[in-house]
Image 1 (cartoon, rainbow, N blue to C red):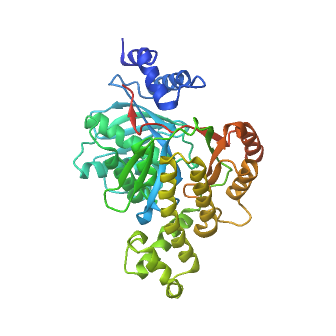
Image 2 (image 1 turned 120 degrees about the horizontal axis):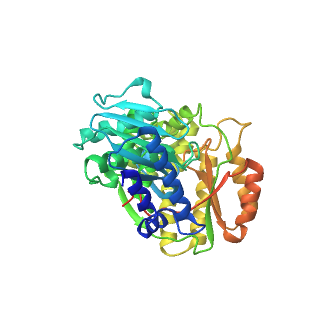
Length: 425
């Protein structure tokens, strides 16, 4: 039997079914559906590349930001989770330094790893992410080499679940598993991925997205120090009677980079007033005492965004404490407060006054849930998605209303994936 026949046979085993149930959940015929997805991608890899090299199946999850909206880039705290949607690759090693990737719906990408320096023509391109991950891993002493990969993703670009972080963490996992024996820890993977996005891709993101994807499960992260403190948590929202829903009401991320970049920049302007690089280094009381003087140096919006940062950090602590004492209503209270702060003070719900799909999605969620569950902006804002905790008895109504307003499949019901990047065993 060849490598493809061997892998197809392996995908039919109970051992693999258990792994797929672990990654994606066991309900709604999910392991069987994923088996067909994996087989389809395997078929395409054989058609695209005709290789008979060893085959690996590797995936990395999208992420959900549950608490801590725009706090990570100023060394704040977050509550986050990996999502049951993922970016999946069939991968074969090459003997040279050439990476060739065929993603569904996109042309072939080729990246020569002989020169790993950033390239201006790879800004905002997948090739930049691949080269950036390779460069940082090589500088840290890891081996990198060529490979061929066929990629599919259920983490839709622009869905607010961070398709870029999933791709970066996947790329790090490919280099790690093919050339380093799978030895890289999740924190290193996250920081390597962030470097690629910041330096090669050209997006000034914090570390939340990459850390949530790489760590897996439900985690609380404190970015105060150079080495973030990550603590795993356990909470089963479904057993408490709630579904986690992400609503994508439409809106494009195009031309929004300046809006995203302004948030950390303005927070750092406030920190700079106190001679510090990040707001986390400035005591909250000192900030409050100096608002009058601050207003002479920075915009009122910068002050409001700094106020959001401090309060949001406290809310993350309150959210974590509520879950630990199994106070789900207290948790929801803090989630709703987080969303209101993002709307009023952080001001990342819309960029153009006559185009407010996120505002409308939040208003509809508040009306439907009517005091039950919770709703908030999800992630960077301006476009993207909202995060909602929906009582199971209201789930059908919630999905019906949201999809009537924003289109078919605009409401996704997600599970928390228990692990980050994963190579099928």
